Length: 165
Image 1: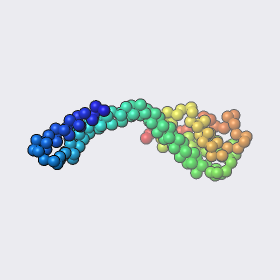
Image 2 (image 1 turned 45 degrees about the vertical axis):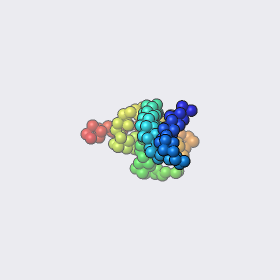
Image 3 (image 1 turned 60 degrees about the vertical axis):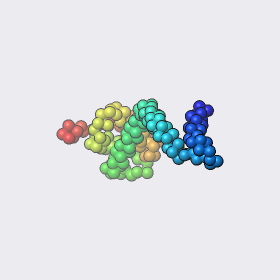
Image 4 (image 1 turned 90 degrees about the vertical axis):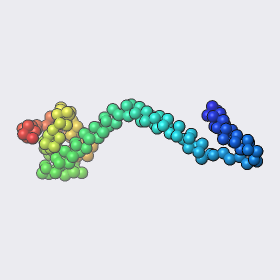
């Protein structure tokens, strides 16, 4: 409602010269008036938009970073498991593995992770083995007889390569 008052006042002031001249036609420069109004509103809208984006980034930034990191970890583990399948004789993706073969795949996958992403290997620590087992389980590669007792949940890896690199 308040925004209409200055607009009406501006239109009245713009029409005064026409009334003073005594003519019957009134010319209101709508284009010029709209340009002036937009030149006042534009910085306010841009400032409000910038503040809103800053607030959203401050609120959602950490959550987005966590999601991206989790996706990265999942992708690296997927690559490591794929490499384990490729490097172990008798391991074929899409088929159920025997427990000894599954353990070899876990060890090869862990070693690949050490070689390709040593910082991620250090970050995951003791949870790496269970994560690799979970990925194998999700692939359907573990037999029903597989359990925490017969799977390699703490795979041995050669970290000497990491120190050299």
